[in-house]
Length: 422
Image (cartoon, rainbow, N blue to C red):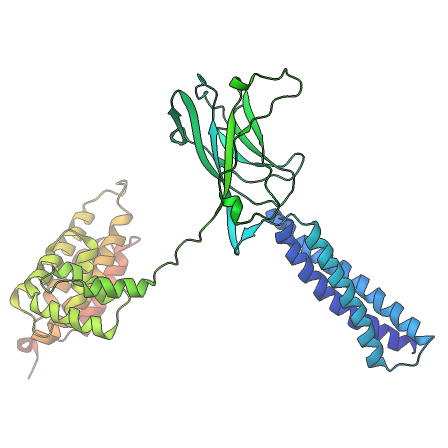
């Protein structure tokens, strides 16, 4: 095989090696718990992928040159042979990485935790915690840091004069030699042997025998009655139940509403995740309860007032009390603008007030426009009053938006019949 052909084989193997090494590195991020802080995991994957690509390219080149001086094979067969060697090396690397990794054990595919029960010596009372607090967790001598749980005072109880603790800690290591660590403070840092097999079985879910705590080798051996004792068992961590479908929950809540429920409880279903069936029912409620709709418009709850004003669009035959409520809202907006016009610029609400009034006006104007058309009312007076008041301080304030919108509405509204010229 010629050198150009050998280089082509090396390129093909290099691309395959780049992909395979990236996949292996990505698996190792989980197996070896490579931190993603400051992009460490990403840099690790990229570095290993590039190194794997270069190694695979070298394998492809060497394979092609060995074939070149031996049996005569086509370029495709040589490439297939080189790729086979690359795949074999990748498979061996994956196996070695998996065997060397400290992978968290599972039981029936579920995560595990160790339930711990500790008894203190008689007369021992819970010491004051230091700045790190009381913690418990699985401990590996000289190994990687394992997750711990923070203990609370409520986790400790007193039984017949003895301090008792019940806690559960994550089991995230398959190391053969491990301990259970209970740290109450700097002076009381306890270790218990945890002779638990690397891959726990169903029988490990039973309580173990009681084991005694160790002691500092530089200190004399404490008497048995002064030692802490503990027992443990493995427990399967049940996954949380799936979150209910929000739409199904909302449908159930809607179906449970009694027909005489207040209108305020029906209106949210008109605007939040609406559907045709619910909208039809809510519209019927709106038309049957116009008095309640008017009361909501006159109320002090901003969100309910907005929903009520938006609901005016669904009223087929507006009653006089509903019209009066919408007009009252227009007067309330005008009074708000009037109060703003006398507000000093140093007032804390000087900037927020126009924004609030503008939002309120934008909701009101649609309701009033609809009533104006449905009932043939003179729509100008309330809009004109708002426009004239907003014009007073429209310059360099948020009132400019209200003034522009009110003027546009006045231009669009038809004058009353008696003002039209024959």
